[in-house]
Image 1 (spheres, helix red, strand yellow):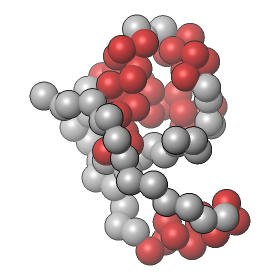
Image 2 (cartoon, one colour):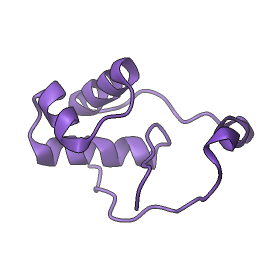
Image 3 (tube, one colour):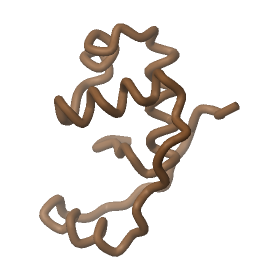
Image 4 (cartoon, helix red, strand yellow):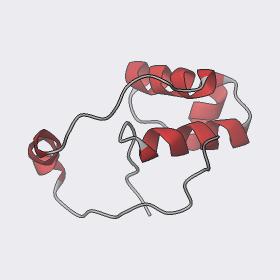
Length: 84
């Protein structure tokens, strides 16, 4: 069972350099996600960045399930946050 992320590493860089930093990293592992996590990933892939409330509304997930899905995506390198 996946434990939600309560803290993550912080990186500071200019947005225009994001592509270069991502090219240096290994691709995140794929597959094996819970159905809720797959739904959140699909929604973000189609809609782009969203506020948490928008994501909950778009996916119709309980906030706790959306938070857990985001934690799983962040832990595996599929999602990032622009605030801390």
